[in-house]
Image (cartoon, rainbow, N blue to C red; front, side):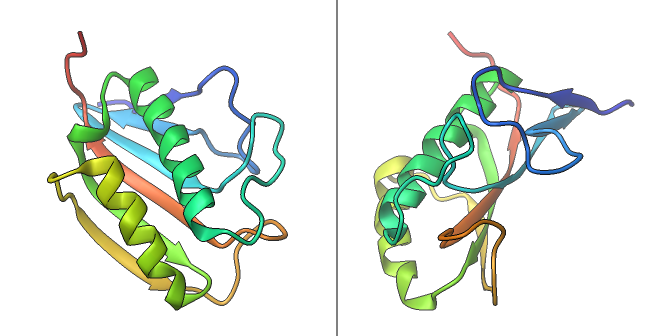
Length: 131
C-alpha cells in the first residue's frame, strides 16, 4: 500500500516539507494545523476559541478533499500552549462535533511554530462516501 499526499487548493502551503494530509488505505492522517488564513497569516490572535474554530474549518476542508468528513474523525491530537485555554477549546469542540466524541489526546507544550499561535490540532479519520 502506498501513501497518497492530499493537498488542498486555496489553503496556505504547509510550513515545511510535508502535505496537508496523507491517505493510506482507508485512513487519513492530517498534519498538525495552526490557525492560519489562506495566505499564512494568523487568525484569532490571543483568542484560543477563535483559533480552534478556524482550525476545525480547515480540518473539514482537508477531510472533504480526502473523501471524508468530521463525523469520520477517529482521533484528535491537541497541542495547547496555555492549559487554561482547554475550556474554550472544549466548547468549540462540542459545537463542531455535537454528541460525537472521537478519541483524543491533549498535551500542554512549551511553544508552537508561529508568533501568536495558541494551539495546534492533528487528526486521523477514515474515508467516507460523501453525498
